[in-house]
Length: 147
Figure 1 (cartoon, one colour):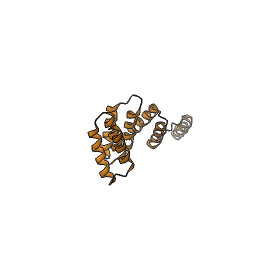
Figure 2 (cartoon, one colour):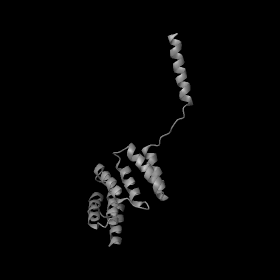
Figure 3 (tube, one colour):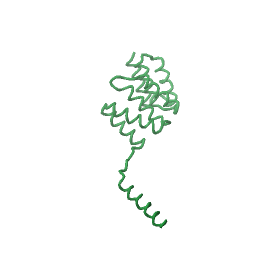
Figure 4 (spheres, rainbow, N blue to C red):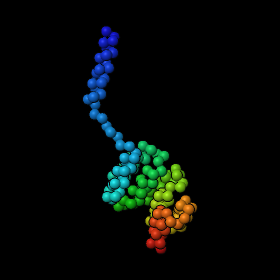
């Protein structure tokens, strides 16, 4: 009788599992790809949602924090305080993150603090080893346009 009960529990468990819908939860990489696609369309709501989920899933992911900060900065009503918070986390996690240095520099220009942007430009020159990397050139151009 006991064997029969165990067999029934096992079979009913499998039957139930087959009837249970499977939820495919996106990976952090999938969320980041979705966020980048949303950013390309200026869909800041989706980009923010996806990057917030990516940060929640992997709080030590510098790229996710950088992209979340970017969405806060670029949306129709920029949230610079939130952007700075996440850029700083990204840089704490990876002090050599070129994208975070470029973007926080641009955020400082939005906040009318060119002297802080200049510090990140100098950091980029050291990280890149020259003035020719894309992030350095982009921040330098933003600074020139700011002046």
